[in-house]
Length: 105
Image (tube, rainbow, N blue to C red; front, side):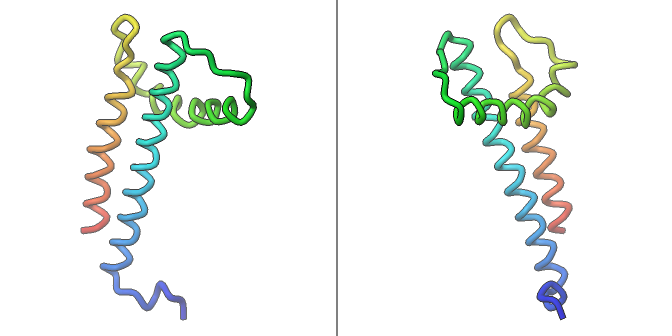
């Protein structure tokens, strides 16, 4: 018999809700890191040639751009200010919170 079958349904739902909540928090953190790296580059900061750092920045771009691209289609930038990450984080936080509440019951 598996360990999962021994748990009551409420505990399983709470565990899944905690997992989804953690995923949402990690993705929000990745978006913040992407915003900070973009701001650093837009203010003229030069990133030294460092393979691990470049790989990290590429990872952030590849992970965050598809999600933020959904909002960039509908929200035009205001000059040099891009509001799509802010809206993306709000949608992720509010929508994720609703999903976590629905899962946990």
